[in-house]
Length: 77
Image (cartoon, rainbow, N blue to C red; front, side, top):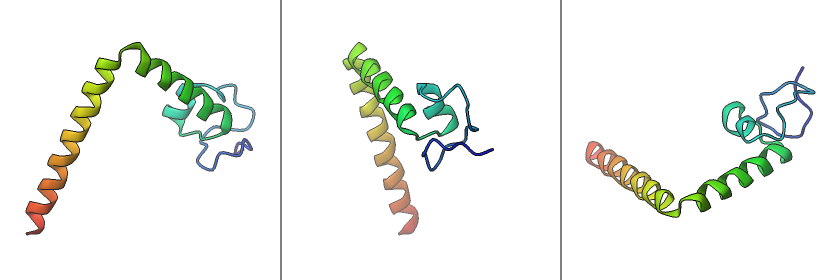
């Protein structure tokens, strides 16, 4: 039975104990309020635990995105 938590993309079933966990947001796509709050708290702690790591990962993602966009542009032309 579909969950009635209010999350449009929720893949958990009604009454599932995993609501309100960051793993439910990431692994099950649950977007209910409790899961979004848990994910936000986890993410803030992760970022603040090692800001240098976070900046490195952001930079890598940016570079991958730019390379992907450049490849798309090249293929189009």
